[in-house]
Amino acid sequence: MALRGVWQLQKLVVNYCDWGGSSRGIRAFMESHLPALKEKNPQLEVVTQLVRGQLPNLKGIYKNHNERVVCVRNLAPEDIMLQASRLRCSLGRKVVKLRTRHVTKRPSVQGTWTTELKM
Image (cartoon, rainbow, N blue to C red; front, side, top):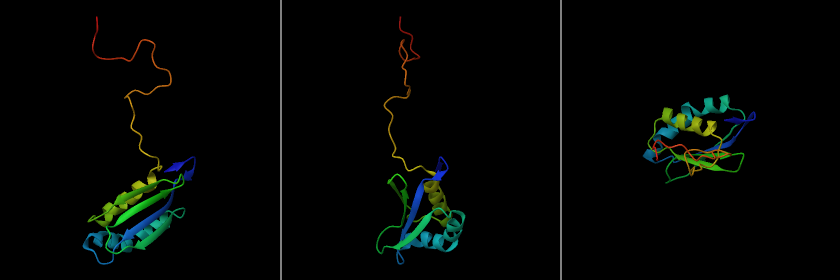
């Protein structure tokens, strides 16, 4: 995704094994879908790494120095393309759990609204 007109995904690393059966889908992805992905996204650096004996995964490296790793074991090439586009379209921010459901800068003087009526 672009933040202020700048794509946040800087580098996409494709790790695969040339022997393992769980990497069958990513090898087909590299033959069919990866050239089109490189052509459509010239701002994106795509690197393939042969890592024998390991599960296949996609690693996204973002401009804010965060990384996201997605395991693509036993997935079809279309599903791997979907995961790659999800990495491309995300901002790379860490997931933050909110403390409350309602977030505001100025909390209500009367208190938060509830469905229970207290008399």
